Figure 1 (cartoon, one colour):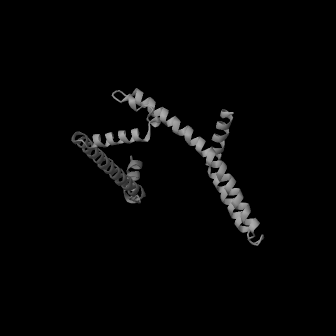
Figure 2 (spheres, rainbow, N blue to C red; figure 1 turned 90 degrees about the vertical axis):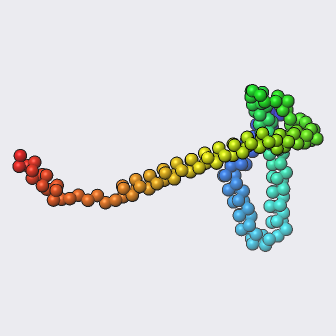
Figure 3 (cartoon, rainbow, N blue to C red; figure 1 turned 45 degrees about the horizontal axis):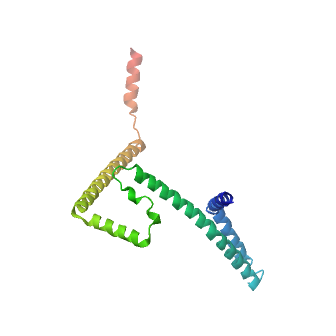
Length: 177
């Protein structure tokens, strides 16, 4: 039963997240709006859209929550594997999602202290400088490539002049021989 629900939830979640489904929903709302004058904007006319959207929203909450739970768990497992596989990483961080809120807050405070230490601040500043240098280098390369491209286009677009007299002289010389 769980597997059937999982499969159905994933398929519906994928389907409802598509552009075609969104356009279909927009179409339904537009049709509903255009039928307003036909039904004289009656209470029943309003009840149709309200009831439909309420039921769909109610059911979608559970489907979306199921999909989010699965995705979140998958991400946690991937992160746990990265922690286990990374040399020097603290394996105690595997499974943090199961800690109490107070324990997570303690870890957060610990990380804030670590990032505020002078050595960490220096390392972060060096990293920021390297990132800024790399961005400048890439911008310079992009600017140079753009300039080269513009020059190539200008050269290719320039009219080519052929001197007819020189061309005629060469053909006469070769024909004289």
